[in-house]
Image (cartoon, rainbow, N blue to C red; front, side):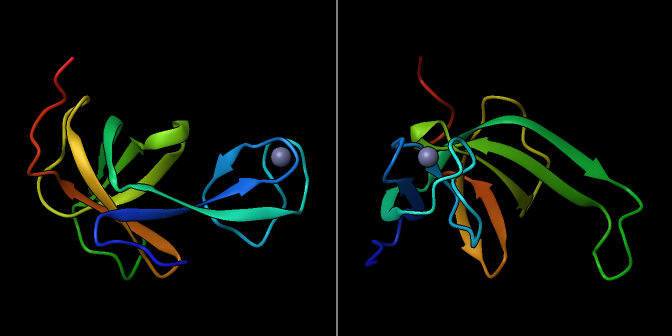
Length: 112
Ligand SMILES: [Zn+2]
């Protein structure tokens, strides 16, 4: 899959057309195993965020997490780079190995 700099890679189930984060497991909606790659804009909207003051060993404190909804209604739990975002903030999400990271989008707040 060729991703542009501001794309996020997803999978689309060939059976039920659900979009989901790439994984080794089956489709989270129907349990099907056939899928195709899909790329969507990496900018999404923060649904919730939290700050963990005493994270597990090996993680920096404070450890900030945001639940970000991107295209297709896919929700990504991402490690926040920077200040804790408020609900409705726009963030750019990127895959970083087995985790996701997010930072405030230069696009600014959602206009709706
Ligand atoms: Zn499915």
